[in-house]
Image (cartoon, rainbow, N blue to C red):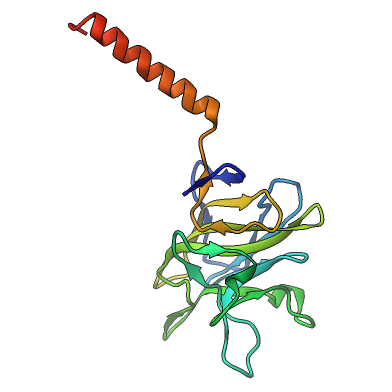
Length: 200
């Protein structure tokens, strides 16, 4: 799954979402423009994420009269775009009237009786929608969440640079033509060298 208009980032080590004490926060600037697009919160029993500004997250619908839902884990290849919020899925942004420090969508929540949350025990993708330069863009965030403890990690993320265009979960940039020519040229040179000197 490669596409030439995708920006992709993978940290040198996964970003851990874990503490045994009180709440900590990780601001994720998806497109590197200096603005936080999503904030992750985690403490001794909870991991969640909140869209900032006009951003939205793909979630499972909670049954009425509840509002909101758990973050939906989507598999590789799932198309993330304007039409993704259909059926039991919905695009969910900030909820009006909810206190700023409470407005987090659940990835996992653990109590004495056990852990819950659609992302519990998942290595999957979170579908995201955010605004950049006044236009809507779609992306994915790769997450690993434990099944039995509030322990998780952000593995990588990517976003489609063309406004309004969908992106497949897990899609990465395709190699540039110059990179392919360089690799192809090097292989061709090595093959010719080997033919001219069979002892190598």
